[in-house]
Amino acid sequence: MRVIQSEDGVLLVDDSIAEKPYTDENEIICWHVDHAHQRTVKGINFVSCLYHNQGISLPVGFELITKAETYTDPQDGKTKRRSTRTKNEIYRDLVQQAVKNQIPFRYVLNDIWFASAENMKWVKTTLQKDFVMPLKANRKAALSAEAKQAGTYQRVDTLDLEPLTPMTVYLEGVEFPLLLVKQVFTNEDGSTGVLYLVTSDTTLSGEAIPTLYHKRWNVEPYHQSLKQNASLEKSPTQTVTTQTNHFFAALCGFIKMELLKISTQLNHFALKAKLYLQALHAAYAALQDLNPVRLAA
Image 1 (cartoon, rainbow, N blue to C red):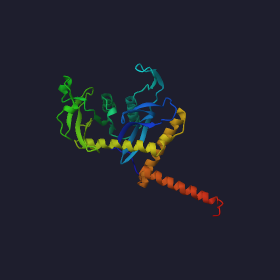
Image 2: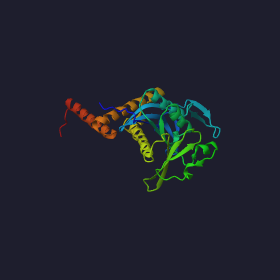
Image 3: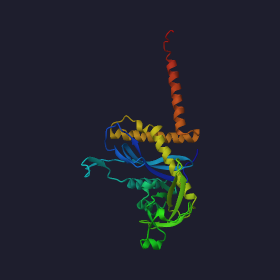
Image 4: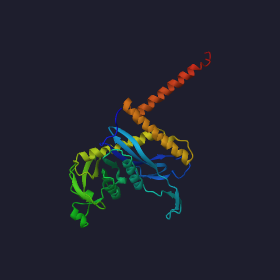
């Protein structure tokens, strides 16, 4: 049996929204801001913690965003919903639970929405783990401990950074030094993009930091397969309990496909097509066994 766990594993934390535009609103199916598409959508917003190693990604924790509290928006006077817990609080709980469950990993990888100073300190100081996180271009950093103490900070995008050349910096609200690296890449439309990455592991090289962070993108196939292959968005359920059960069932379906991927060397979409074809063959064979009456031409 193939062993998936090792100290080379990483934790990926990210959130996504399973859209439910035609389902009645409740505390888990409600309106959420989709930062990726800059719009508000109706559906289930969930935060997942994935363990990734050796090309395999397995969910080891999740939480549905529950907006059970209602309030009146002072701007438009409308009644709206909100959660009593922030996504950053959920982030820290999921990572801590992975540590408590003795899941072996060294790095936590997440997108820019979870790259707060509090989360950085939590991972490095409290959990004794390392991280790689992206920074917004306007994030402020000091170039030395003395500059930090004096409150002399600069915007990250104003620093004299050569691509893939690490620089030691001190962020506001973070007591320990970090390595900062700039990655320049070409987008699909031919435009040039810049990504600023920081890590708490000051032994990493400039090339190793973006290579390590690239593993975070394995969370995207997870979201896609969970919705399309495990039918997360196709549930006819109407209550919070049944909707939560369906989410968990879809999660189990993803895990089974991910484990089948090891033995079959097929991706989730190919596995779904193969299973569907076999189901059609089985249904046709069962129909033939019934020996239906054939009509004369």
